[in-house]
Structures are given as C-alpha cells and as structure tokens.
Image 1 (cartoon, rainbow, N blue to C red):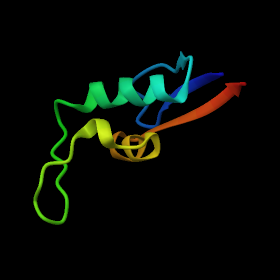
Image 2 (cartoon, one colour):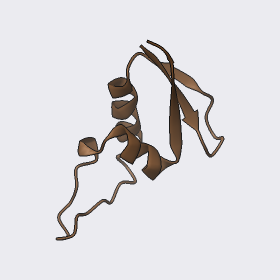
Image 3 (tube, rainbow, N blue to C red):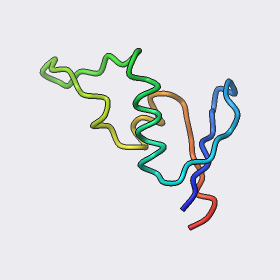
Image 4 (cartoon, rainbow, N blue to C red):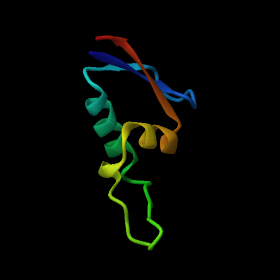
Length: 68
C-alpha cells in the first residue's frame, strides 16, 4: 500500500509513505514539539497514542491511499 500525505496548509509538498502507520508515526514525531494534549482529568496524552485521523486533524493534514 502507498499513502500520499497532503498538507492542507500548503507548506509542504506531498510525500508518499509505504503504510498508514508510517505516515501516522511521522506526523506524531513532527508534531511532538508542539503537542500539549491533555485528557478530561488534565493528564498528559502521549501524542503517539493518537490515531492517524486524530493527528491529521491536529496538524491540518490529509492523506489519500494511492494503491493497495
């Protein structure tokens, strides 16, 4: 499977990843410096526990599966 990363802010070119998980991990790593997520009890949320859709929403990214 190949996945195309889409930057909804237009700052980065599209990039191809070999899996959804590879894309998720890259986005979590990229945003780890600005992440300040907490749950309802004010406990820190590890950015690496976010789903791909959650990290995409956080960072204004999208993706498209280009082949399986």
